[in-house]
Length: 383
Figure (tube, rainbow, N blue to C red):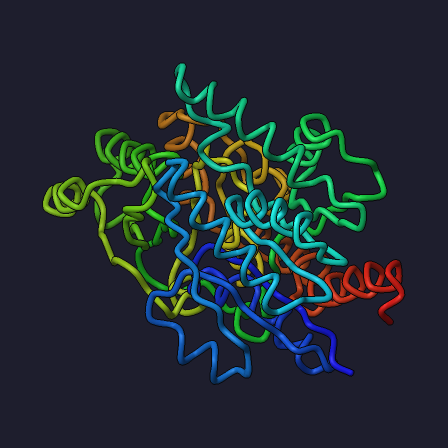
């Protein structure tokens, strides 16, 4: 008998970039693996891996009741049709809507992956407060399944939701990020030539993109020329997110010549290897940023913010530097220090690789997930 594992994820490309190795290992171990997700252009890729795909209408930008009701109904119907033995819910909407649907459809076991609390918990204003209040109620209902494990990526998120949702200690655990393939993200020598300072992220305001550009402008004003350092932005806007940067803003920065805009890239190991310093000045509701894990695996020194998720991805002053959020001047100081101290870059980069080998190897992350599946299925007597 094959046991059915059903992933519910907001969009197909996120599943492929963050959860594919877990699903492939489940297939190898004999599970029948289903994926319920919003589709872009990845349907054939998912099917070629051997997954059964169930399209969903999950619009991350639509917070309206009607749109969420439609999404909930679709998830509920998939649960009733597939009759999974275990569901793995990934990202906020699937966790909330899928958690409710799992309880109503009597799914035997549930894994909820909290990969950051998102913009709802960092936004300001009256509307944001109302949304947080509503989301808190939904979390309490969605995370009320009797046979549940909630996976957090950092202790701040765990503490917040344990309090909001009244979660028992036995229902929560921490897995530090989604892992990195250490055979793809390799320890390589630093490139020769002008130091490259790189930010790679979804191009959201909350990811600190503007602070990165401002820090580059500050350093140019201090006399650091284009022959001393190159500043590079990798990524694309995310129109489904309210905090997405505008394309015209990126075009203006590129025209000014202070930063280079490389756009979306699919060859991230090579991109990171081409850099000397990786920067992520985020104040977004991060889980544990994947790019910081991958940077460590490549032996690249990191500058990030003293912010939940970001600070948990490094060993401060050993694998990278921490700066305050929304502080372009402090970020500029940290960048300048590492530009002028190549030996420090090498030492911290080597320590980052050691951290990746110890904590972030994809095999370790996959094994921890498979153990969680096993334990939950044992509780209901399915295995």
